[in-house]
Length: 353
Image (cartoon, rainbow, N blue to C red; front, side, top):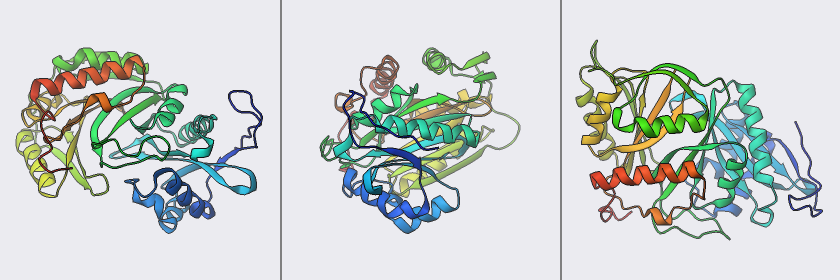
């Protein structure tokens, strides 16, 4: 699939830009583009390693698209892979356009190409993580029918820069997950915590997801919990997945939090499956540990609830540029209200991050 462009969105004639799948031999040009866009500040270090990037493309781990200008110059890039812990959700990432060619619709065309990849791969949904300080990426995603479903405050390192847009934000970088359903979004019973039910139902309406019934949930029984966790050294984030809430959910969650904090995690992200009757009880336990609501993602068998713990890191919402999208503003206001209630993230950063 190759697309060409003879005119900009404003109608002005310009050089031809082709959108095509990335080939292994493009790896060196892509790493050069990423340095042009980020300098050396991109937390995903693999985008600077042409050997590793080439291997990921060759083995099919990463499906990528590039925008190619005259003479074969790579002027845009975007990638698609499975979301952490949920391979049925496609994660769009690393959307980058050369600073000299921003505002010409290239980001949107790359996004459409990646959506086509996602349909071919059979993902049930796509989600795109966009830095709040990068308006061009956010606008490109919104124009393609994606809607805000989660906001991860301070989830990326401080000091990420975009020459010509913003050098640094002065705090840890935040990410908005913009999501789009690809498969029919209809779920059976979902066990939604009562206090978060209005915002979750509103997010489902925005997505076009239908839930046939909801229940408050029950105390977890029937064996031990199933939990996974990992520390992402590049972003400094600790990730937790509770696959099944069992009788020991308090202990396993507290243990995962201790282990990730001792590993040096700056922020924590928790994933809960809302088709699990025990999830509302886990939400209560997580909130007692300092987690707050972050949003949802639609998976194969139901909704995934995201929660976050800023561990005292101060994030100023006024510095977050999420545009005028009503869904995004509503979600940010809701997350902010949860933080105000708990005091999470309201103080100075004790680690100086």
